[in-house]
Length: 479
Image (cartoon, rainbow, N blue to C red; front, side, top):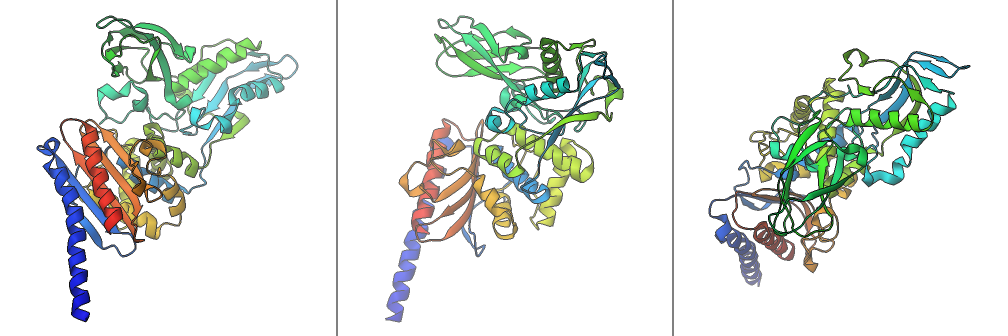
């Protein structure tokens, strides 16, 4: 009887392995994969036993799966309740009788990645109006000086040097500044006509984000292939590519080239509209080099949401800006250097302290937007395993991952009922890159950690996503 049960066990085991291997073979046999590379690693979350692997240590471009490295390090090193603070104050002397301020209005940037973000409207409310009201309460009627935003918390290289030029002018390529505002992005609205015609710019939202843009767009087809090209701190740029024809209102989302200066301009105009004149032009610490490090009298302070809340939006919606801010904040706190390079150094130290082998891990930013980032499926899975088994903040980290078929970047995929309640993951995508990493629970009750990264496939990405879904479906059903 004992031998009979052993025979049945090994027969079932061979069938289960075959089911999963079949899904992987379908992926590799797909004509889209002829010139592609894939790294797959699936491990039992509790025992650490590998369940399935395919070139697990091959270093590949992870795209936004890279955010898992940054967000896990930020949670561990800064803590889930960490907040960013932005302060407004003044320097110089204030004559209470006349209301004359001989000095400057100063806004101190504290590296808040979500200040004024549409994702956090309820948190910030009408904070700009509140600032103006606080200034009025002091009795200030005239400013013989200017509004200066102190953006010196981070360096003045907001865009990581290994990003593509094609990305920097668009909303998803917005840089991380010592003082960011409104997600550092704005809308450009177009009216498009027949195929081959030039789209007409209808307006900007917010209107005060308007700057000089040469329009080289064409109306063509139904796909958005329009790109804004502009550099940080510039006041001009151009738009290339094509956007869909015959649209009454089509929107491209662009990055703000100088958010600190934009905020200084907004506050200056708001003061003027309430009858408080400001004699000087708005400026920033970057422009006025001797203004950095000034110690103003603080009028008001506003704190960001807790880090765990920011990270939940970061990973659900895959916001590059938030990840780059966290990277620079890690550099500022642990190296006193708010730069991408210092932040990356902290990430490597985090990996070393977590006993994760960093060989084959090449980090160039915090978000994964750089195509020069490289990591293996096993490396990502080891980070996820560390967070699950060793981090006291795992619940916050787990909650930051969107649920399959329901939330964030996974809302429109993994819709098969087998994934319902059984899979949370971070997705990654860029040209010829698709990746997924996270946690799943099998129907038999096993908790698994996984990462799948695919580079340089041809044809449509949907074919690759479907094959990845099949691999994970077989895993949930049969392990």
